[in-house]
Image (cartoon, rainbow, N blue to C red; front, side, top):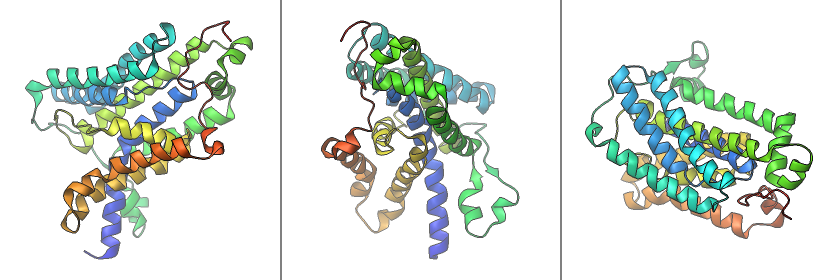
Length: 309
């Protein structure tokens, strides 16, 4: 295989594998921008993957399966929001519990569906005209699903909403200083609920993509730690939806290369590559400069009690 063909294949597969990472990261960015850490992304994604597969297999409608995946992700996130925003439980403990619960429940419910190929997967698209562009056409505009392009469009839309609208100012204010936001008349509880549930909806779609498009079947644990990569990607992107685009596809490339390079390097080492890089990102955020650390929302992970200083 020549270099051009190898590059086209790598970029194309990186885009495909980066889609669930992008959707999950965009949702987590909004949750954390509102001040709520949700470590339950893995659980929401696996529930979304199972739900999308089961519904699509039963109805033959992958779009409906993805809508149901979004709904189940939102419901799971609603539980996390209730625990952390209303009951003010520890956000990290609640998120970990959600991940373990989601993995266990999906594994239990999915036993009868294990190993069955999906009868009607989400179709891929080839964009007329653009797909004919030399090299770039094959890289970007052939054999991708609608979720690839919707994810990129959504990232731009969410960036505009976050940094160019009054709604975005409200969300960022709640994440930076909820006391001040409350004094200005912003409903802190409502903003946090909406952002956390929205994050769950996107995580559900990301998980659903895995079982109805990327690998149209159901396998227990098929998210394979992608939810934890999303947490690292949120930091890697500095809580910025636009930076999440290239970050997600970069991690997608690492996943793809971990399979493509197995004839040259140790397969065990290559499979660890995406996770090792995620650990490096998390470690760098802890030992980074003060300027980098200030990018994190000021009240991230801190429950808000009205009237408490």
